[in-house]
Image 1: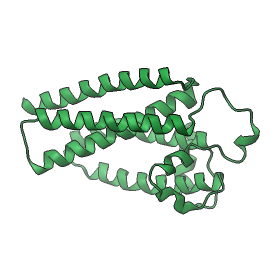
Image 2: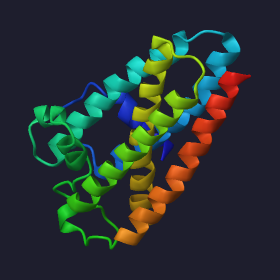
Image 3: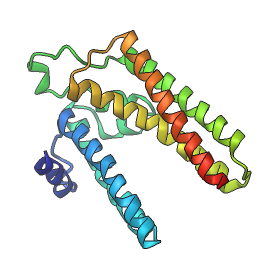
Image 4: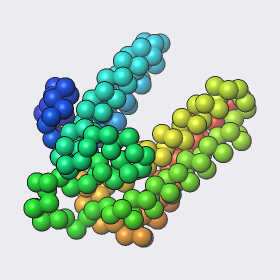
Length: 200
């Protein structure tokens, strides 16, 4: 697993290669987990330079990985810039995977857009709650709250995708609603803790 993650970073300039869906999701998952290591380090050092450098490098490699995914599914690279549809394409089976027996757990387009709509609703709910309870009404607070809600939307999609493809959770209406309820409770708790910290 780590070897595959390192290989993706090492071959980030070889955009003629292809990248499987499994490897792409592995890259997203480990990169996201790395943030939990970088944030405390930046906080300890009192500098955000490390976070800025990592973010720049991550998005460069992410763009390269996206191009490789397009190569894997035989789509032009500029499809990456089509909003929402690019998420569908990044999760699509590659040419080699189409000849392998499909697992029972997968996300079809209907389920994806339903989950996307719910995730956006969760993000907006937390945005309204954060703005309503936060005692500072500055422009910076508004920008951070908007970034926070956008982060929740992406986080919701990533966690659900990992549950399906790595833990073989079957996608049904009940599983989507149950997951959405759990993530809503989790996100509201985090939002309330963040607001409470800003009060102290």
